[in-house]
Image 1 (tube, rainbow, N blue to C red):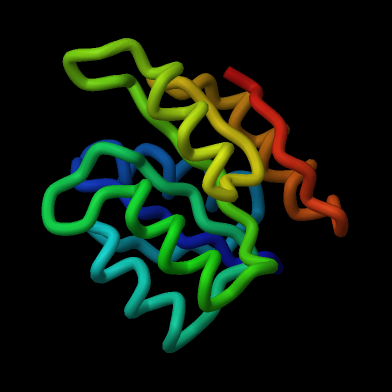
Image 2: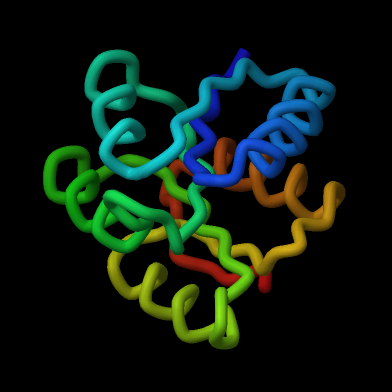
Length: 131
């Protein structure tokens, strides 16, 4: 069973994603920000990270940079609703910094599960946008 680490500062988003992923047959761990996400990944690496980009303490962009330096093969799906801006700018930045795929919030269940499955099964992990 693949293990997925969800990193998002909104508890209700983490709960929704956890439920979708667990129903999809995945083991799930959660972190509220990039600092905690990096700590958890170092202690127990996940097969995939699903992260928000706009968070307090350490945002998703900073977390992607740090994780890719330390773990170049880490697979990351970045998500954003854009906050006060359109999400495309954040998602494009995440792709350039190493996110494997991107998703626009609000998250569509089927699209998310498809992206997760394809990313986990892709050994080359090319950068691709599903937003």
